[in-house]
Amino acid sequence: PPRGPRIGPGAREILERGRRGVGAAVLLQLGAISLTPRACPKRKDPKDHEKENLRRIKEIQRRFREQERSREQGQPRPLKALWRSPKYDKVESRVKAQLQDPGPASGTEAAPFLRAHSRCGPGHPPPRAPGLQLTPPDPGAKVPQGPGLDVDFISHNAQAAKRAPRRHSRSLQVLTQVLEQQRQAQEHYNTTQKGHVPHYLLERKDEWRREAEARQHSQPDPALPPGHTRMPEKQRLETLSSLLQSQSQMLRELVRLPAGADSLKAQGHRAELDRKLVQVEEAIKIFSRPKVFVKMDA
Image (spheres, helix red, strand yellow):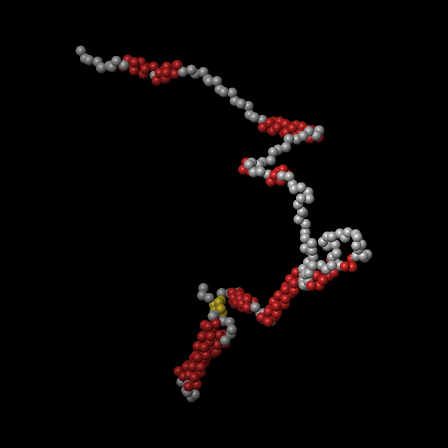
C-alpha cells in the first residue's frame, strides 16, 4: 500500500493553530493580562503665585507695624553684633591698658611746658625792662621770682621785625615770572615769525591752485559743438607748422613759373597752385585759432 507523508509529533498542534489563526493565539497569550485601566495619579493643583505673594506682603506689613508699635512704646531694640575678625581676639586693647594703669601722682612730675623765651623769634633774648616798676620795691617785701616777669616783649619784637628779611608774596613772584615768560615769547615771535607767511599756508595755496586748474580742465568746453572733440595743443601746433611750410614751398614754386608760358599745361599748373594756396591759407586760419575742434568718427 502507498505510504502517506511523514508527520511529526507536533504537526497536529501546528495544524490546529493555523486553523484558528494567529489572532486567536495572540488573544490566548493576552488572556492572562488585565485590560482594566490603571489608576492615574492625581495631579496637583497649580500653585497660585499671586495669592502667595499677597499673603507674604501682608505678613511683612504686619511685622513692620508691630516693630513700629514697639519702637513707639520705648521697648529696647536688640542691637546687631558688629563683625570682628577672629585674628585679633588675643590682642589686648591699649586704651584698656592705659585706663587700668594708675597715672603719676600730682606734683611728683613736672609738666612739659615750654621753656622761657623759646618762641621769641630769632636774635638775642628779649631785654629787660627796668622801667616797668612804677614804685620802688620795698626792701622788706618779697619780690616774686619767675621767668618773664621783667621782660620787654614789645621792644624785642620791634627789633626782631627790623632784622627779619623782607619776603615777597608767593603769588607776586609767580605773576612776575609768568609776565617775563610771556614777554620773551612775544619777542621771539616778533623776530622769527611776525610778517612771514607760514610754509604750510604756501603749500595749501599751491594745492588749491592745482585743484582749480584740474577742475577747469575737467569741465566740458561750452563752445564745443556736439559730435566734436578738441584737438590737442601739441598736434595743432605741428599741423600749423606743416601748413606754413607747404605754403612757403608752393609760393616759391609759383614764383619760379615762367611769365610768358601760354601753354595749356603751364596754365593748368598755375591754376592748381592757386587753388592749393587758397586751401592752405584757409587751413592756416583755422589752425591759428587757440581751440580747434575735430569731428569724431561715427
